Image 1 (cartoon, one colour):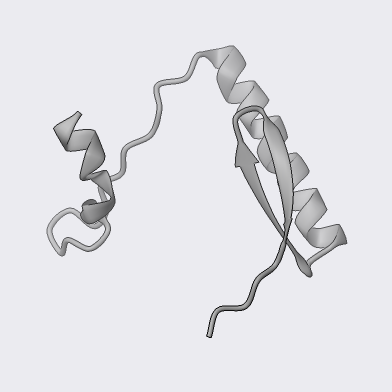
Image 2: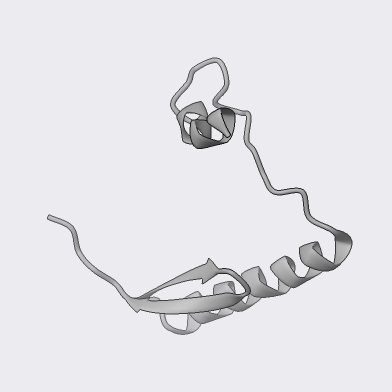
Amino acid sequence: MSILSKKTRLKRSDKFDKVYISPDRTLEERNERRQLVDRLKDMVQSSPGKHYFIRGKEVIEAPRTTEN
């Protein structure tokens, strides 16, 4: 758990910036994920003013916020 909680630090490391951690998924889970990602890409293209993300097994739409 200690390693997983610090996984975001890998991106900032010069030595390990090419290393990433991803979930171990079954073939069925990979296919479901691929379909979700394709659906997310379609939604982004059709409505670029909104923010979309994947949570669980669904694509969530949220209003795009601007940060100052």
